[in-house]
Length: 536
Image (cartoon, rainbow, N blue to C red; front, side, top):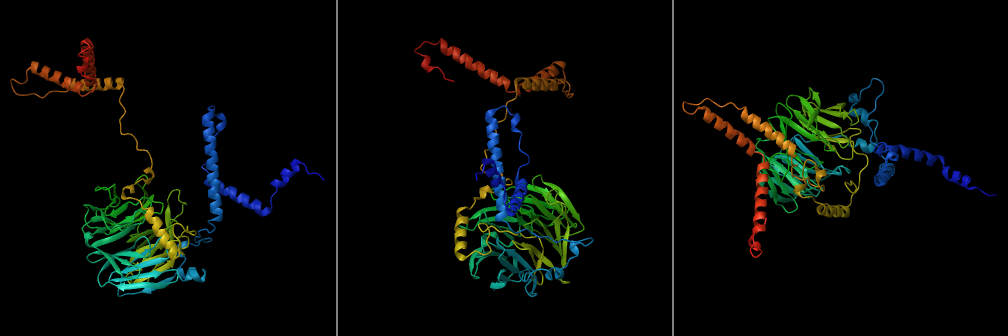
């Protein structure tokens, strides 16, 4: 029995049902990553351009297919959100209701640590979300492993602690204390005392540049390189004391909120602010950046939260009747706002197209708790709350990124992997000059600053306009003897001549004329003297 070539091709095309379904899923995912419909290349007559565009379209298709395969095989988990039926509202769902539905490991993330003698507390998480640092106002510092729910180290510094921040990993952390900022090791050993900064109010670490940024009580902004300990920049903001400081994760620009309602953005290589925005009529109480770096949320004392698009520096949305002492964006774009003993979670109902934030979840703390700091835990649907009586943790479904990249942040990394990652991050360290509003300009060609010369007709038109303006200028009446018609005519002629001199064409013509005269004079010289003639 012989099988024809047509039957053979049909057998190759027929696939099992499971593979057919996977191919259909892959095709729908590929459409999500394609850059719209391809160009109609049949109408092109230029063969070279047609070949280039055809190869480019093939490259776009390959990259979309690769991205779809990565999503299918390497990103299996999907972020989940609260879903309600009928007239139910997500913001009416309480933490007790969520605890009854989740697994045992997730329910462990709901807790309340009561330490009334050392609060209020500031919190910070590592990039992987495994470790948490808590700093009490009255000197209590605690380093915790959130995966095992165990205490690694706690120390009492016996003086005021205003802020805490991890450095590049959990091995080192900084604390802004009463007089100076200090750097401690994982075992609680004091490693450095940073005296140049003075009494520090806020601390932030720029992980890609290994810079520890801080602002002190007098409004001075400092950048210190933690690899060699040198001070990179010391900037006087000129806006007075501020307690609001945040770093844009997209470009490393530091934003400060001031009492006059302005938000200024800084980089270490400039003594002047890159951007100065008037965000609120009164003092700015908090600033937060979206993980993509294109959205900024600010809150003011006038009980308003504003969302800003940093690509156009314009206001996108205003949320009324809510004063937020602290703001925080999650990895999936949820916005947490806290004031008093109340936490409100806002979600983008538009899916990121128009940035329309509305109420997603609410949570009320025990009456009397004063919230000091909110911070989402990376790669977990958890938010940490530092307050006057200790710190707490609640579940926020859909806040964390469900898939982690072990090359970027690995919650399960071993000590050997941590050491290798530290070496790689030091080799990939970016210089302070790379901090700018638009980091995509790095590696691009700088446009030429040379201005285009105007055409001869444009110069003539401008000259005529200037001459007419000089002729129509009315002269002031002066004292007797200085207001004669001859003097007025002479003054008008001078004004016309001055208007003509402002155009470079005359100077250019005179230079050409001198050059020609010099060439003619050199041509008339005898051959023995031509070598002494001036060369243009």
